[in-house]
Image 1 (cartoon, rainbow, N blue to C red):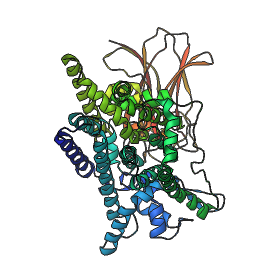
Image 2 (cartoon, one colour):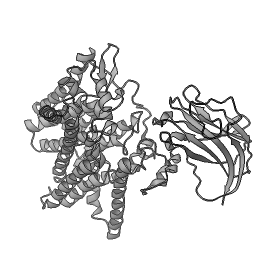
Image 3 (cartoon, one colour):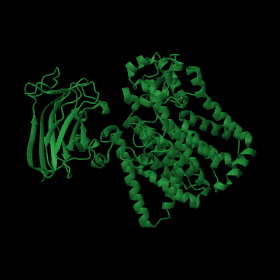
Image 4 (cartoon, rainbow, N blue to C red):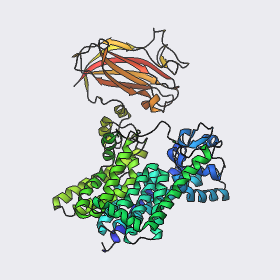
Length: 604
């Protein structure tokens, strides 16, 4: 046991909580924002819908009140709240666990709304504020329990550093301070509590800790059903040898009155979802994710861990310390090894077996955040091990940790205010182009669609084609003035394609080709998958040997004419022509194009 002065870890806890409060209430206060940037928006609105449905509108089967809420607050499209069940009712997409955990903050907010002039509709300012407030409170509660647990096994300074690096150096900061109303923050706290009560129960089994263990497991599974794997933590906690598992089960049998209480509490909480499904849909089990699911035999581990799109260790490299820590647990804290390792392996496998392995628009791998409570144990073990390294090695480790911390703060800023981090469409080329910067030309966004981008001075520039459409009466024209001359090309939902313009080009003619053009749209298309694309292709006879594209609407605003261009490297292999076309990908927004110029050039 560690009985040293605990002042450092207490100060670290206070500073960490203060930082979360400052970020959440001053840097980026979601409770003070609207529409899809509000606290109750996107997934959170789906978790939350149970509460206004039950306590305000008394309509949880048909949600007939939701249309007016959508029109007034626009928290997200309706798919984030419920789906149409064959029985004719609407069934919530998400499980009820978060609604249960939101309940105290919802009731306080509803009381405030009833006593003031704010609309008591479940979505006005008091509800937004209290949900943010309650979420940050939960984050600090989780850190408090985590500190108590870690102090049982690690010295005070190690625990202090663990807490600080977790908050300042990982995307836990984002999901506690800014997006704290998501599941991950609350689950982190449930895991921290589960660890603490489990550890205490094995020291002296008792009714209170048994109840708390069952409540943590039940709430976690009611929040995300896959969190049921948390049951492995109390099963394996304290085992120094996995071969002692039968002995552990005999111990549970001897203490079965406490185990039965925990299981009963867990089942009672879990039954809330079953009761809801039976009440609303008439079925005991409903799969609410429709066409989304798992690929159990082909998990996306490589992408989930290392991809530039959303790789966990790419966007949260600090957690490499947690993975290293399993070595130190095996060597020095064997009683902590099996529970944390088995949970972590199962958690990572399940997380990345989900087919939408990037988990939407998020900062790094949000689905990993709740596991940080458990991974903090090997994380602390690594920090404790570093203390025994040679001075130069400790200095190098300190520099790397400092760099990782700065990187996380930079990512957090770029995700919310800086604008350089695209939460769902990062690529390797774009990542390295913007890494560590605060200001970049908007033109660099092309690298989210193509990995080819020319920077430098062009030489040997030769124009090989020009299209101004003045004499082309076959093109579709919009009800808007042409950008130049008497005619411009127009794309819309009924006319989604331009012609595919082809021209002769041979290997060795040049090293780059540039296609420049004027573009104007009455209304910007915001849906990435519907944005008009410029596609450039190279052919060998009729066989396509290369294709690049960019999304044009990335660079447009409403009624703003811009001059855009796309540079493509000319293939070195065998080809005999190139072509380009514009494709309006099922968008109902119109796009006007004119003065398309094709040039070849070399780099100076």
